[in-house]
Image 1 (cartoon, one colour):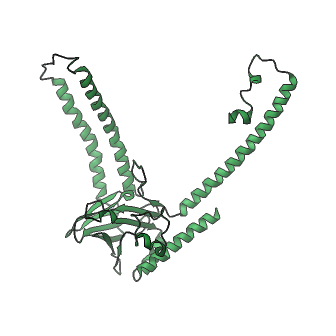
Image 2: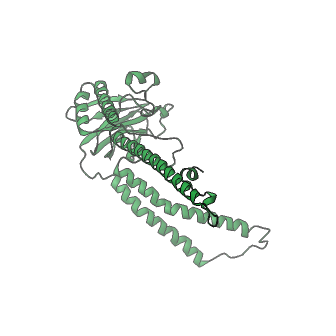
Image 3: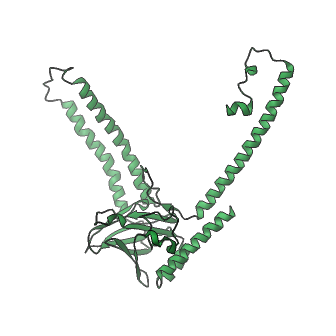
Length: 333
């Protein structure tokens, strides 16, 4: 109806075979011209508004602190922030080409058996005990499917344990009941503890925005790493088995007491990324989050120099710089 009113379409006088006076034609033509001009003005205004909004969104998103975290009713992976996670996502989509047809085939066979071979429709059951063709198909078919899945699976597994280059930063993550210790193995080694952020401490920490710092995922001190830098993570535990997992990075490694495991990642996008201990480790297992803040090289160097002596001050200065950059970007739009 809105389209008909704005553009004068589908009027009874426009239908073929209906006599239309000349005056009506002229009036209708002028009305259409006026309607077209109004519609065009509305369209141009809307287009201008949408273009401005899109540009603002693009500029703001480039500078804004991006946070990747679990979302309600999420049925797929979190948006990948590393090439390794993209490979995992591609492999997951690849396996779906086998999972869906096999599931449908099994369902069809079950329905066929239920309908065709029920007692009322088939009172005398078949006494067939051997069929060479069927046995060959159900033996060779699964073997081919397993080979098609195994080859890219082994390639992905090899890539996960083979960094493309020597790590430029090494961090040791130690799981405790129920928090994490991070030790930066640089020229002057330093460490700090990272625990779940309590609601009463949000204002003091400047982390009241629950969209950026969600409940049960935000921490008091994030693990800070530079963007586009291969980072080695040495993982262990002090008490029970924990697990260091960040979905957007495509990493998950168990933290075992008395043993040091190793993983790596190379984050390609700045922002905040959240994970959790994914190994049942005690009554407060649900309160052991992992938060990784990925920043630019310049921001990381500035943070690192201050963090060697004062981690809280370094974090506060880093957050102020990021917030200031976001505000400037938003004001410029």
